[in-house]
Image (tube, rainbow, N blue to C red; front, side):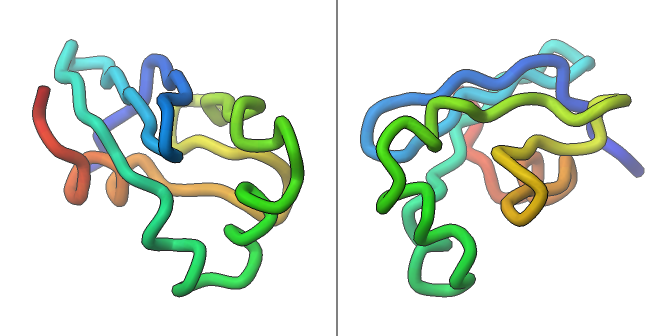
Length: 82
């Protein structure tokens, strides 16, 4: 099942506020990915990149550029309900 993303907003300390098409809201922390996946380090190293997050076409995920993205399922399953 896909949990389509309706909108995403960057939060302080590399958090994301993700609103899904169902109306559910979750907070997702990107910071742990910096050590896990090399491309995500750019979000901390490149000034202003983190704030450029956008919803992918169709709501199947979010992305910052061609190398850095997260699926809607990752965000839903590992995000914290708010």
